[in-house]
Image (cartoon, rainbow, N blue to C red; front, top):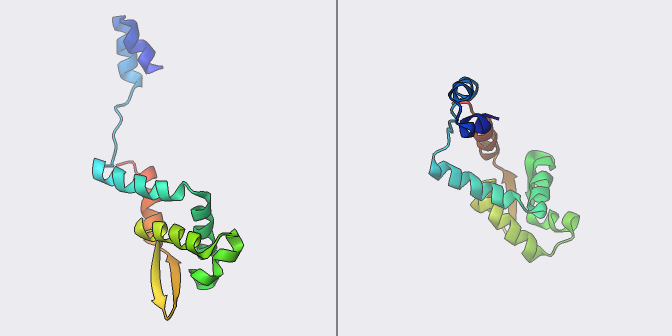
Length: 121
C-alpha cells in the first residue's frame, strides 16, 4: 500500500505514506544470512527433516546411524550423505563409538534459527 502512495507523486499522499511506512531493519548481516541460508538449504530436503525429527524424538535425543536407515527406507550410504549435510551445517553433532556413528540434535543451532527469524533488534 505504501508503494502506491509513493509512486502516485501526490505530495499529500506521500506524506500519508511516510506516516504509515516504518523503515525496515534487519538484525542479520550478510555473513549471518549466508550461514542461515546454508542451514535452511539443508532442511529443504524432506529426508533430512525426517532424520532430524527421528533423532530429536529418540531416547536420550540421540540415534545410531544403524537405526536411521530403516524408518526412511533409504540405503545406508544415502542416510550417511544426509547426515553429513546436517553435521556440516551444525544441526546435529556426530560421535564415533566403535564402528557406529551416533548423532545428537544441536539444540543451540535450532534456537539460533528461531531467534534469527523472530528477532526485533
